Length: 246
Image (cartoon, rainbow, N blue to C red; front, side, top):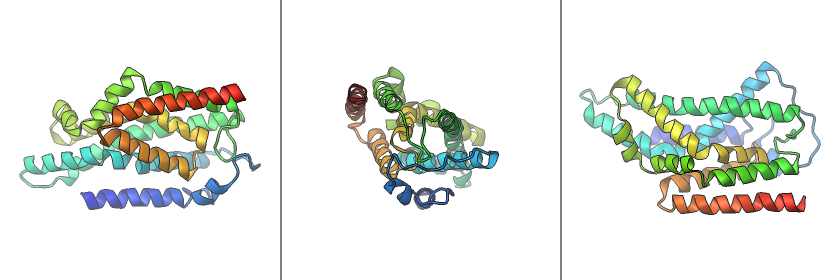
């Protein structure tokens, strides 16, 4: 199970670094100036599909490391409870439910990206072009760190055993429902953090990697709650500074 997770995560990161099918590696896009003039992409059904896949694989790369504890614990419990010892099916159903939630988020993110580009608020480099919008994203993400719902979701994410005990359902469909529930808690915890990609650059590796590391620390280590409040203060301060100096 550990080996399979490592392979999936590694493949997801490799695809993102390679450029997610956009004809240019993420390394090249990260090095380009933020204000570089480029021809905006033409939104066709095929391009929209590519953007959805880009977002979904990116979510997989960023979120699976922090979801590994609950997946591994679930696989162990399923193995102990199963006479046949076939844990791949229920664990796969749990993972499918978890990833389905992030697929839903990826659809919303793709629509948001298209809307922002159509309004000329997002550059061809997939970063905000308006200072006020970037500031609002930072402040909104910072405020969400203090939201009661964020903290409730974070507690569930930090306690995989507690989550599994409170939400256990038998069978494959039960495993899928549990995956949906855990994915919903992760979404509630991290969705506004993912919106920061619109500020830093959707394909900027520094932002992608930095957010992935932050989410892993926030969800896995005991300092998570304190770190979330500290990050909230920092984001609000950064956004306010942008508004003042704009």
